[in-house]
Length: 341
Image 1 (cartoon, rainbow, N blue to C red):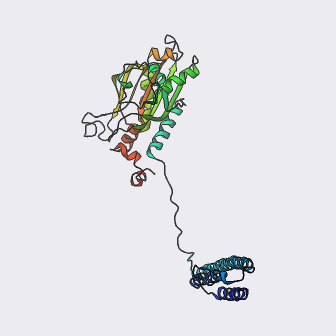
Image 2: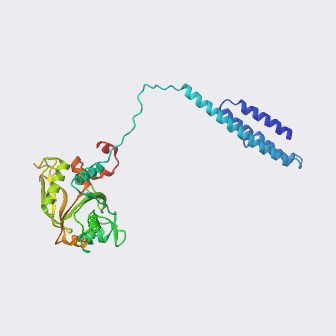
């Protein structure tokens, strides 16, 4: 049986060496190492060998199996390398053809508007301020003069995590944090841009959206300063021909408060479907910081005054670019996004 094993070794090695392609190599593997292969047949007949010879024959048979497997692997690698070489030789490359252009991305329209807002207000002396998106009930409501029975605390409007923590519903808590950090030093001029969360979702509302909050506190700030600041912002953002209108309103954290409108960007103020024939479009809310808000933040309302304003960045972007559906901002539709190069 040892002689048969030697004959099988010589035959298998010669056969593997003579293989010319991968299909033939596969046939050789099955012939010699398969379940019904020559080596397997030899091992099955091991029972007919003398008992004292069986360990030697078995050991040499297993060694032969490993040797043949290595020989087949080396032959396979050699055949694959040869095939690659043939492909490179046969492949013709026309170096005069234009290359494939790299895809260049562009900034999201909300990013563009945020950067423009920052540029305008930083140019006016405002500093960027930041606050957590998971906010406490105190900063989100109580410190902003919103009592416990205010509708803004309704579970239908806010995402509560616990009884005392929720996803912030506006960027106004950053006002309190900014004043607490600086009190009693003056002046304070900050803007905060970031995500806010409310339980709402339709063509003009989203459960997650972006706001910009502005705050200025000093010893002699008046409503005229607020009007001048927002006049400049509207004209820088929407063009020098924009008119601005202030309407009385109510916010718990400002007194007096106002809604701010600009002349319709579609009709120029003459009246159209977009502005409901009023000639005006609302862009933000603003007002003088409420004395209680100043007081809880560490400032004496008898010695300091301030103004605050807040705007939805999606709202500004929709007006600036003429976008009719808020959901387009979050749909990841390249046909929409590629328009803002």
